[in-house]
Amino acid sequence: MATVSMSLVFQNPLISPYHSKTRPLPRNQSNWFQAPTSTRTKPTSSFSSIRAQSGTAARKEDIVIVGAGIAGLATALSLHRLGVGSLVLEQAESLRTGGTSLTLFKNGWRVLDAIGVGNDLRTQFLEIQGMVVKTEDGRELRSFKFKDEDESQEVRPVERGILLETLANQLPAGAVRFSSKLEKIQKTENGETWLELVDGTQLSAKIVIGCDGIRSPIAKWMGFPEPKYVGHCAFRGLAYYPGGQPFEPKLNQIYGRGQRAGFLPVSPTKVYWFVCFNRQSPGPKITDPSVLKKQATELVRDWPSDLVNIIDNTPDDLIIRTPLVDRWLWPNISPPVSAGSVVLVGDAWHPMTPNLGQGACCALEDAVVLARKLAGAIKSRPDTIGDALSSYGSERWPRIFPLTVRANLVGSLLQWENPVVCSVRNNVIFPKLVRLGPLLEHTNFECEPLQAPVG
Image (cartoon, helix red, strand yellow):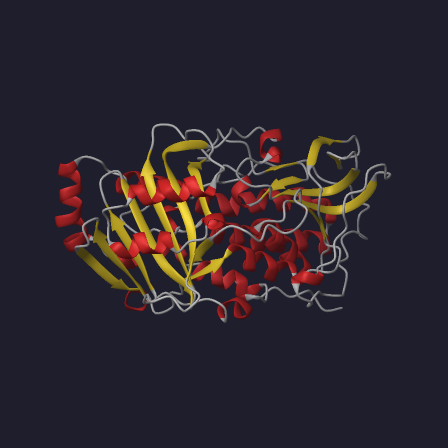
């Protein structure tokens, strides 16, 4: 869900807490990490995989990436572009091509261009031209055009499943190992990391990259606390209009008291939507999709009819409900991003609320920054890989921490319940004070194409 609204402007700290040295790795590793040369261009239906087999002997791997989500596949592809191979472990039996949609701003698209898949995705999804903000009774408060605020801005929603397939299709055959859920992780005496899967398969890896999501077992092993519930939940869905959806390419935001909603067209036939509502606790998990659809509809029953119609046009299996959580990486308190040769990327390190639309974008940024630093160390001095991982944390923390905090505060402000405060928001703040341009400055991110060294 992409929400661009009131925000506190945080200046990046000059000093990052992620500067501590990690233990150097052995020097006799100059023959590590050569990537396979063949690339996959076949459709996902022919995506070949290595499935976990019980009873096999422990195998040696240079780089193991845990998790084949956006962070894991983007990291694997970034390394591959730089001539470095890796093995991706995914606990599911196949790519998780279900789910709804996410919105990428220009920083996300610059990363996708850098790893060579941006144009493949652009042809499938609409570019969003602007944003309209309304009250729950349909009154328009403000409208913006993204290009008027920033000519270089690019906003497009993408279906999560198609993004994963596109990334995976660029990896060498066998780069993703399915049915491979992590059971145990521990360090060995020689500095490598020992991994055991639930089926008993054992691996020994020189480097482990944790891309295993919000509830990351690797982050827990490294000493990170569980993400904290922020006080609201969200329904999300992907509506389907087989005859063509009727909406303009705009992000539509609707604000009420203690809840908000939004929708935007994804493609000529699909529309993404969300409903965010306050709740003291996350509540029980609901697995019946028809119940989810009914609950989402009840929340906005008297809101603009377009929103209700979109929910009605959503297949039951394309509706999800999630509690919103985050983790603040407090300086000098939170663990560093790396422990020896184990490092975190994306939600595994910095889960954030979706109020700025930056969760996936930041995971993509992490992937290319880490890949450049790792590849540089591997190609020159493998004994400095620990320093490269620390450098990755030092570079990324001053960007990630303020965005996490800002996203949290934006969500809290937009979930106001007090009627007086909501009246001020609707009659003063949005119509007269809000400027979109400064609120999108966090989408600035420079990223050159990734290319393997010649020779």
